[in-house]
Image (cartoon, rainbow, N blue to C red):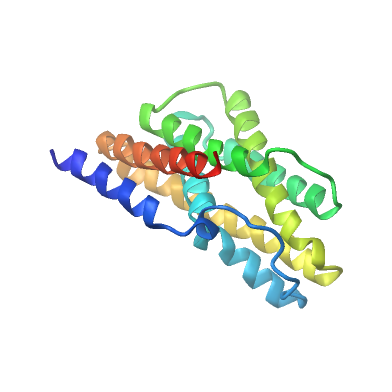
Length: 202
């Protein structure tokens, strides 16, 4: 009964979140022009957006529980995140960015919940595909920036994302390997967040 109540509470909390917290809504108005300012904004962004926070933690946890070696899927995520950001900054039109971000949260949550095992190359490719769309959203936000601001933002988002992946790996190994019901609960809550995001976009 407690687990059911927790899931209901998590769902209610997700519905209460404002949409901008869950998904990107366009450029940031060009308000981050300096190197350090752009770095700080980009580094903290994955921690403040529920979509990115959930997806990146899920990649780390899933990798810790099922992928060997655990670092490869997160590394692929960071690499393709940067590639997607460069594509968005360059003005390439990437279709379906918001639905793919929402789908990534749903799918990664389910992978954690069921602790789905797959070869590391397949896991890295899957994480990389999702990461590209997360990166494209960041790149779109950088479209009003130039020069040092872009460099600072790319480095910041890569390091911030990497920190969340590491946190997810530590969480997976230190806690969820010992208490697998927490992985089921946490992955289920993440999947519900992804389903909510997709419903809001419909």
